[in-house]
Image (tube, rainbow, N blue to C red; front, side, top):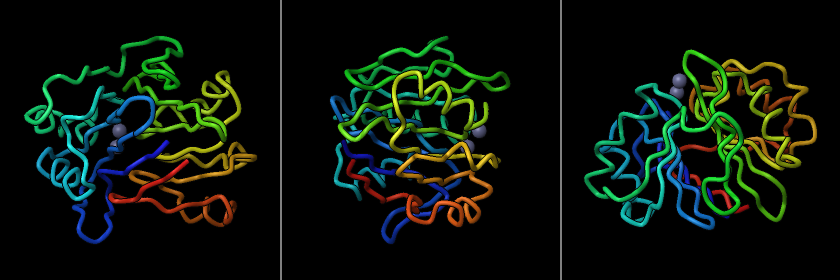
Length: 200
Ligand SMILES: [Zn+2]
Ligand SMILES: [Zn+2]
């Protein structure tokens, strides 16, 4: 499985940064998780990553905040076929592609779904902003099996002990306590930004 970060507040040289998040999961299918806030930047970053947007099978939107969904219109100019799975599409964990699950909508205001991807190493949890609380997302994800890695926006998450046992911890976007997480888990921590590729 490959994860390519296509949109983040920070970017590698050559990629555009912008407040928001998007990543491509290249697994049994190609799933675009969130779209950032600017479709032009998103499409530009697709190009920089040498990925054709028309090859995306499905778009999953984590939650209805502008920095996760406003890039969708720009993306759809290049791919009008991909099915869009909205934040409140499921109320319980549901398989959306072989080996790729939505946690179902969690929380309220706004409802948010995260993804759980089965890999040989264990399950990878992918979050948008983690508004329902990363600990709650992880508890839901663990129903699908042990968690190997977690990446995405962690927002104000501070119950660091909940990350115990997770081998890959890659916070980005809206994460407020990045430095503390790095200090608590120096060997598991991985910095990611637009342009980063994770091979899992
Ligand atoms: Zn956000
Ligand atoms: Zn948000």
